[in-house]
Image (cartoon, rainbow, N blue to C red; front, side, top):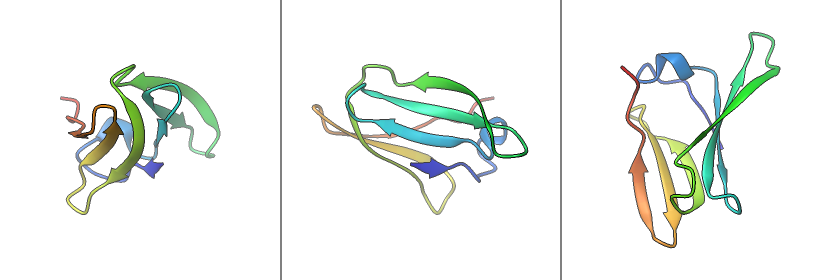
Length: 78
């Protein structure tokens, strides 16, 4: 799980990025100003089993999968 703090993803700032190993997606959990859950968006649905989600020191979010093994950089929204 990672908390988005990067300027690369201004619309996601403060959101949680959670890997779903069994369900094979990354969940973006949007939180309100009080930290309460608002909604969920599923990203990379059925691409592979998600093993890890992390924000790098450069601010980009990376997803590591297995079966097939990949490292995916999430592309910031325009």
